[in-house]
Image (tube, rainbow over all chains, first blue to last red; front, top):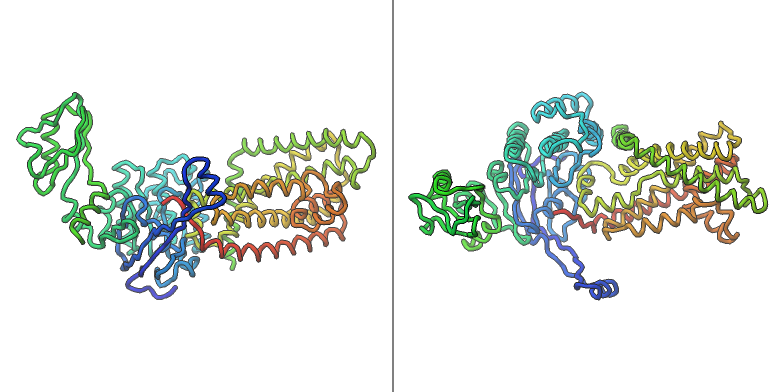
Length: 338
Length: 265
């Protein structure tokens, strides 16, 4: 392997364009498209540059279609850039894809790599051969990962019979068997409940701490990013709009939460003893007969206090605390003119 | 090098394992092949009852056993074009392309693993029906390993053509139409439905040089009419086509991989 540099990933002036067929609606449009197709050039990644140091955990977030998955796919060598330069662990991912593959691991949350109809152990054994692992080392490594991920109980069950959380733990093991230097995680907690998400996050952090694995994580879940990532890159419409510490974005932009309340009885507005909505720091986003959403400035009010007061003053069916949507954060970043 | 080969061997093994996991599906597959052979026995029985005992140099007995072989060979591999096409459309191909193996070789190992199981069950089922309704035929048991080599090379050729079509799905995303056309070409020009001798002479001569005939027609003909001369001719023909297709596949793959458009975010 080439000498590992301090910066394990370097991306410079990266551009990726796709040719997208444009079709007018209806049958006429279909015939027209058949004989005289029209194309539009879409810039999925537009002049992106960044570097990642060894051992960093970087969150790569953005709305759907922002270009984050396209960037990840170029870093792993799957897609070819239109222009620009990428280097991962000293390798050109496009020209040296197979060589690089020995040193990276990937988990794509919505695209499983485990053989669906067979037990996970069969896939692990296959991967040990794919990565050309020494038999003894593989057995020790597998034993270690099985222990920390706590999968022994279902290692021999067909993957199709496992729960989402169990499957993801096995997916992570499959991606870590060969001790990768860089791990790409694309939506690793998608579809999971809170407890399982927490466990997966802990395991990811453990691997980073103990093995110094550099991790690139994409997620729609802001809590994934906040809990795991030191650094955050926000991408929107193919461009980087923020590249800095996660702590910084929390302090600057995630200063409010949204509370969604479903009332058991019809009410025109929420009642809250000793708190009035409409005051600075608390505003109504939407209201219906049963459903109300308010935005709370967490620098002025404690969420716990607000929730307790809502529960005390209203008969509720359901209450949910949400982070502002990523689009909202991006919009506020633009307004701050970063 | 051994470590390199081991990954593909393991892929073949896991494919066999996957196929064996579904006993009912295998049984259904075997049953279907048995039904096809039964239909062929009745169909060709009527044809042979109209006149000569010999059609295109084949007796009824030889014809049926020929069809047992062609049916087993042609339908044994999985539909690579659809499998790879679906992987590209869903974005699942990302998992293959981020691993340190040759994608085509890996799919070959997978395909052959499954093909061996499918071929065996189809051949056994077809043979049982043929044995019951038409009787056995004189088999030179010593020739079986040689016929087996020809069958394996034929399956390899079958895979290479399908893989070439499948690679186009990197570009056009949906190569199902190509798969459909190829299936029909092999059925007719590959000699799956009947030996190529039934065609007009000029067409027979052309089809005998095309790669499709080396998938089903030649292995099946060797099975019912073995000769060492034919064996060597078939081997040479298969190897020539395999080399041509490998070179074409490598070139096309490298062009198409640059244009791949992967779905799924």
